[in-house]
Length: 183
Image 1 (cartoon, rainbow, N blue to C red):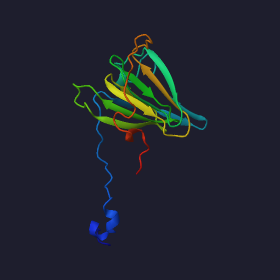
Image 2: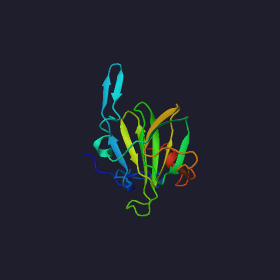
Image 3: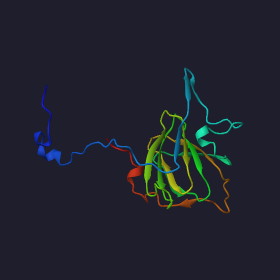
Image 4: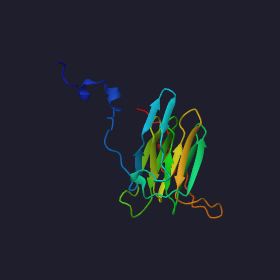
């Protein structure tokens, strides 16, 4: 069996930039919930149940009452960020055949996760519902070369005369969250 290598066994000019991949658990945000949905595949396509209106949402989201259902599409390279709500919670769904990067930042002073940032991929073959509590800044980016879709449910109706829509600069928490991750 060959001996275990050390840094001294490697080319010195490359060793300076060597970093170990981090597989530790990523920070979370208090109240953020990601619910896996069952997706049924067949020869002709797939079926994924989002909710049953007579019984409500999945058990993990039973406290969320839908007031409005919205649809948004994003052109390739588009970033829709950052925004937050004071009185509204969001519930996001990206169809499995689409792929979007979601960014979330907890801005709630009393939250144990205040200041935490979460980046996650939605869609991309999975059926998931992402619950975003009020006070958590959120945004989404399309890093693909095709138009992508976001369907979202809110527990407060949109009022154009008094919108609960508060915006921050798209790069307020750094540009890297909206970039393709190398690795």
